[in-house]
Length: 526
Length: 57
Image 1 (cartoon, rainbow over the protein chains, first blue to last red):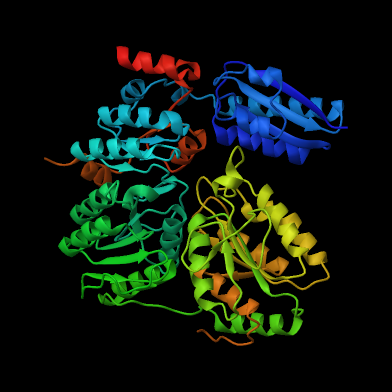
Image 2 (cartoon, chains in turn yellow, red):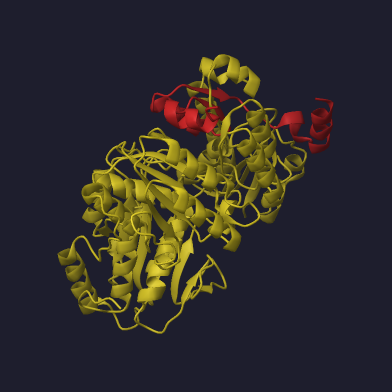
């Protein structure tokens, strides 16, 4: 019978990433641990503990500055070992962080320590993020607001405040940004150059900047707006301020804009801004087909993130702003994969199963697969895209299924799959045992903020896949560059050594998966 | 008047990091000036008390 143990560390605040890493490590390192949770005792976290039966009376008295360690294990010995492991883990991370720069307690104090500071990067829990952002703006700091769960009212108020002071507020929920070639949040390292990106999508930014790098282009700025910026309620304040800033920056020659389609009034404002901009603009409104904002030599619309990068390459090389699309970089590899799949897939294997770490990768793949599927089967997802259906149970695939595993239903109290892939690995093992799975589609996101080796995190699962008697192709895309802290080329090589088919872009991976599931033996697009 | 946003993109970021320590470390690794605030919930997470304190300030 399982036992539950609670241990509190009083008045010791740690950020959620540190705590989730501790919880994730103990589950892997100590046998007999069924559930391990390490979180602050906030009013938002306690219901999560209650849901899994870990809110003991001891845990319930913890306050927001207390760490609650909760373990469900097979035995007393395992539970005690797990608590000991977590205490060691947390004390080691304290020792490694002993550094004089960690002493600041307030923004004013930090400003004294770094005179001339011009940007506050804020990633505190959402309920406090608006307060800290306001203090930063009052102190004349631009803000990158990484935190989510900031109210729409606070977002509007803060953006108006920033705009009136000539400051930039990126976010909330801004996962990725780059300023003067310095990566902020979850960000890849790319060559500097004459391209500036403005995006309401974190992984969308990462895909465009890394593809530009691979095409020998350079990106100097990537301004993240947060996904609600393009709603009419917010009115595109950050997107327009960002566009104007890139217009004024003489180092920028080309602007790439990536976002979900703005709402009606906001799209009019943004189009007006683009028409007034002296620099060419490439636009990818995700899920929207090209042709809605094309003005000769001024702006061009594209269907995918890869098309945005290829169109940028055409402009940088020729000076012509012409929509540039490609089907596949390596048609020989694609043709070989299709032939093998057609020969070896069982007739019952019909469906694509996409398990994504990146939200925009899910969205883009759904858009491409929806348009390409050569069968009448529906496409189920947990994102909202016209022409696809919302999946009934996000934990169980039905038909063709693409899942954003970074969505709230997977990450409440648990680490995002870009940091820890425990949930995705379990789901992967489930999919390879489903007789209807024809192909599995994966993304791996490198760069600062991400897991130090996301491929390694899934290698045990790949070994189990290889032992499986059923042939199931895996198609994967690695979003990264050789400049990233992870080893990009080694990541690709290890995937290939397992037999995973790696594709250079998310769009091409999605196209290949659609063709495999449609059992085509040659490249034949609709 | 030069907007502060223009100065940010021209000079590059000088960062005050508030929250995730991993972001502070990433900025340090990239060699940019950065300081980290050891953040914890103000007023021990008591929202009502915090509201009162903010009013007093």
